[in-house]
Amino acid sequence: DAITVSDLAQKLALKGGDVVKALFKMGVMATVTQSIDHDTAVLVVEELGHKAVRPSDSDAETELLAQVEDAGQQGELAQRPPVVTIMGHVDHGKTSLLDYIRRTKVATGEAGGITQHIGAYHVKTAKGTISFLDTPGHAAFTSMRSRGAKLTDIVVLVVAADDGVMPQTIEAVQHARAAKVPLIIAINKMDKSDADPMRVKNELLAQEVVAEDFGGETQMVELSAKSGQGVDELLDAILLQSEVLELKAVPDGRASGTVIESALDKGRGPVATVLVQRGILRKGDYLVCGVQYGRVRALFNETGEQVAEAGPSIPVQVLGLSGVPDAGDDFVVVADERLAKDVAQQREAKRRESRLIKQAGNRMEDVMAQMGQGASQQVLNLVVKADVHGSMEALRESLSGLSNDQIRITVIGSGVGGITESDAQLAATSKAALIGFNVRADASARKIIDANGVDLRYFSIIYDVIDQVKQIASGVLGKEI
Ligand code: GDP
Image (tube, rainbow, N blue to C red):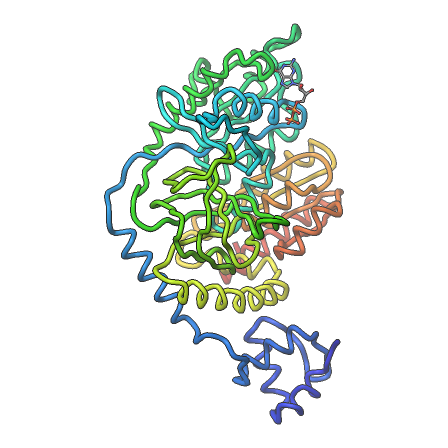
């Protein structure tokens, strides 16, 4: 389904050069003799003024923004519950911990509801409410963050006391650090005879995660997700951390927030679990949700009961959307259906466009140019994977050492072994370049790298890495460093 640029130009009665120029503006490099695919052709036709019918640009978003700002200025900030994500190495007990808390702490109400997996749940304790995102692992945390939605206030990092710090533990530390989200360590499996919490604390110390009893700031709670011993202490620790963070939101007015999970239900149509982050979401509200829109037909909580409304930090299942939104999409309540529909349609058009631009602009130099805008000191984030520990350490030190007062080069993630999905996510969400030293990206990592236009470079000589990073840095600064 391809067409050459010159054929397309002819059909449009335009000069080939004009089409090339328009393509260039969209971030697509092509010469007149080259072919472009169907989607790109449609876009460039629109760009050139042969517009397909679509709502007038920017009007709808502008109106939406005005409405949101209006709503945001009403009402005073009040304390809100913390939103927690549980992370940790495989088999260290994330699921067990989430399930234990759900089973024992979620209020099932008078109807005797049964807790269900809707992607999140909230618990009420004597000291306060806590919301848990119950999609364990990095996906919920990082892919959402990459869309600009900061969902998680606190990461609970589960470390099995009989196993200690493992590769995914270190990854979780790196992810949380990159997102500037505080950690609480749940030292799990304390019921086991070979549990060694001291070892866990020492190994975390090596990752610069310092326990309070070691003079640091990180709360560490010893517990068992199996017996439940220590779980109340963990909830207390979360609420304590949340007090320190002074989490606030406007608790009334129109709601906005983020989609946590979504699906197409056979009987009920599109179903989305959203986390309300501001305001109150009510049955009957009109909302825009990513590129979808609709009117809230019903709201359900995590016990399957209908609720009339949900306030800040509370997860709730929404029925009544036009289609299935993506996890990580934002939602916002608007005054009427027309605006909701206009914004949704406009976004759909934009999304297609930016996908193409992203595909074309996947070069480190571009990423850097975007990142550095406005900042006096430019920033280059790197994720470094190497085949052996020695090389990784050497790279990390020498690369960080290239920083000066104009550019800060930060190795936000590093490790030994192939480039995995988690490395790719970290790079994508942190706008970092990925460096593979004698290691390659696996298939699932490559998918994320391609989809996000992450700059991935392979090396086998340390000097080459340093040389290239220097070049990139000087390109950004416009001179040698
Ligand atoms: P995840 O991969 O991190 O979600 O780990 P799971 O929650 O699936 O737990 C992995 C295994 O460890 C399962 O067999 C659990 O039953 C077991 N497990 C989890 N927590 C505990 C605990 O506190 N004590 C003991 N003895 N076993 C546990």
